Length: 225
Image: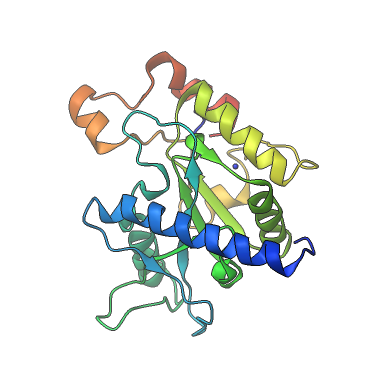
């Protein structure tokens, strides 16, 4: 992570929420489709016993340099992750009819959310959850869902993301994973915490710090990158 987020109700409210969610999904979907990427929504009844990495579709309330909101790195990030999982482990991955890794998209209010064991969210320094989405994300995580967030830089993004995720899980603290933790020595022996910049930034500056002194490697370690 780089520095820089079910209540009982009436039938009328649920219907309104469903309509609003449909409109937002169409609007958000056009973001990715505008870059020539068809959005592949996860079917609500999907279940084939394989590993699927889903992209979290969320609303941004501000923009960031080089960011695309939820569509950042879609769909290649999930497809690349699943390909590597299939190569390095015996875990079967979810594939489409052409044999390519599925690149499912879900929103926090999507019923299919709970069919995603691994949820990816990028550029989360621009993310803003509604109260309903907060409740849904909390339910997802407490049921054992896994959320990976990345590609957000600098103080402003870090503060926004920590504010949003603390709305979801206020009783938990954000902590650094120390270098000696087993997770850093399971597949590869990581002796340092690398800082990975966007390829556009690297080609332009040859610097891994996308926000200059506001995103130094030392600051990343301090803030839990």
